[in-house]
Image (tube, each protein chain N blue to C red):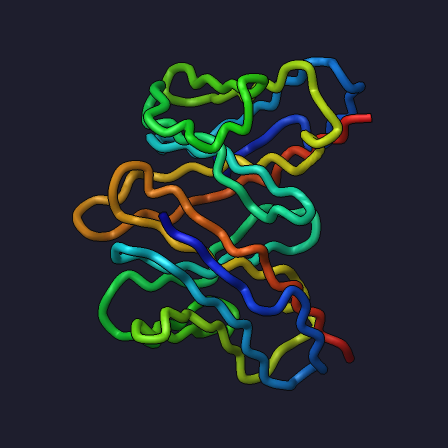
Amino acid sequence: AQSVTQLDSQVPVFEEAPVELRCNYSSSVSVYLFWYVQYPNQGLQLLLKYLSGSTLVKGINGFEAEFNKSQTSFHLRKPSVHISDTAEYFCAVSVLSGSEKLVFGKGTKLTVNP
Amino acid sequence: GAGVSQSPSNKVTEKGKDVELRCDPISGHTALYWYRQSLGQGLEFLIYFQGNSAPDKSGLPSDRFSAERTGGSVSTLTIQRTQQEDSAVYLCASNFLGTGDSPAEAFFGQGTRLTVV
């Protein structure tokens, strides 16, 4: 079975500061890794995904994430955040077999303050 | 349609009543998923449909929960004899199943917020 741990439930930062949202996963098989963002009262939107190849993945809105197999991590980063980045961020894994269902972490609420 | 559509967006029901939640996936998407998002539990997988069959229903929390999909399109999640712990946001997602070695992107609806009073 797979599991995902998001180490911080809340992250407050000031506008234009860098941010890192941490994600660790556990799995006995190879997994695919995702970051989703959820703005208030909206569904989830895919930010980026890691399938294979380069361990540095770039996504939408200036976000990027780095896959580290030895540390089983997939941390999300942005060098300079905006007020509009305030949202909840979910890390997820899936296995490419069967249903491809997503196993999510519990989310990190990012609050960007002026 | 342009995206995954869920209805109703909000539902308040009395404890013990049955509720039906509807999901209209993106046209042509063969896979459909239901997830539940609740405080303290995060996002939990409930059930997966491929076409009209449900080969993975391992996440349904009890026999009060059931789901069906018809015509390879619309899906309905039914909760019988609702309990207060059923209060949550129920999210639906759809995609093409991945081909080769690449999983497809799941597109999510905006969810149905269920409140059991």
